[in-house]
Image 1: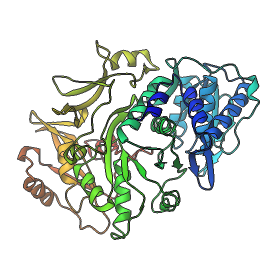
Image 2 (image 1 turned 180 degrees about the horizontal axis):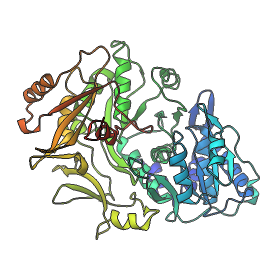
Image 3 (image 1 turned 90 degrees about the vertical axis):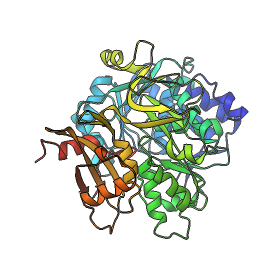
Image 4 (image 1 turned 180 degrees about the vertical axis):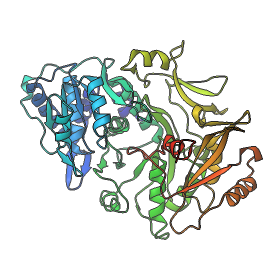
Length: 503
């Protein structure tokens, strides 16, 4: 991290970081969207006027404000306006509907709710009214506006809980994750340091800004003083024009995004889809080594992958100058200040400034931390002699077949080497004889001949997989079920579909 970025990283609050960056480079762009450009100085000024408008609405330090907004310049301005006031903000993914939104509003006790109106055919304002939300206001094109002279001084402490994020719900309700400005600053600082970015880079936000990656990424922009292109609706190949128009040098999101870029590149192998691209970076889902090698060979850029979660936005990250072996097979190294403990049974536990303060529900908080204050992640892995973290799956992804532990990720990584496999998820299903049986669910690329179980097991045996780990069930799907944020595969849906309760 350069000296300027390091100094900015000492900011106590997000608003202090905005002010200090605006003083340094007020006229440099920070957010790009279509023909619109917002500078660092413009971000500070617009956010302060919006903060005054929010203050006129009764928003004060500690007021809980929920927002369900797409990835737009206005959304970023609103979040920093709320940070200026010192409100507690709870972002909600814009694809969520009554069940998830109603739960977030009730649990957070939100006093105000910002919505986009009608967005992508869904009337968010009507839904908010139906749910009995308080203080509803639309914040798509027009934001609250007022005279900054009415504002009290900005909050001085960065250690108060100011953010409530929501974990992705599976078969149960999501958890409200409590973050401070300092925990988000720590996460963004770690990401910026790992990626070795400069003021000459141009980034991109192809994920929902309401995801924990939103502030993570924006902190990086503020630290290094470079801009990012925002995508309200991301789809390839449509988005390629914007990538090339702005000369994006850094893109990514998660493994699914890497695969989408590869798909586009394979349509015209001899013509780079984004000539300026030098780095793909992301996290949020496992990265098979084969994907890393394909990106390097076909896209001609570096790929660095990391490990993070809603509770800890930045845990480890690959560095562009790391070895090929480490970039392909590990999640990178933790930054200074992030402690990783591996328990005797291989579980990963975490302690550090980027770790959340717990959950809205005190009982969930008590269950989430061990006696030494380490967050219990539920992930399984090990540290290499060089300090790189290797994840081998989730505890619930360890398949126990006839008393033997089998890593789903090991099988998935091998399946990704098969030319007729586009993506794969391996799950354990209840089995009266074995305890659990190994089921491979495969998404094939267009035009591929349908795979058979004998063909898959023969391929895996040739790749060196032990016989007792071979899948006993193969399912083919046109598309694996994914969430709407980082396109992570939803294995619980596969267990529901192919398990004993399946029709």
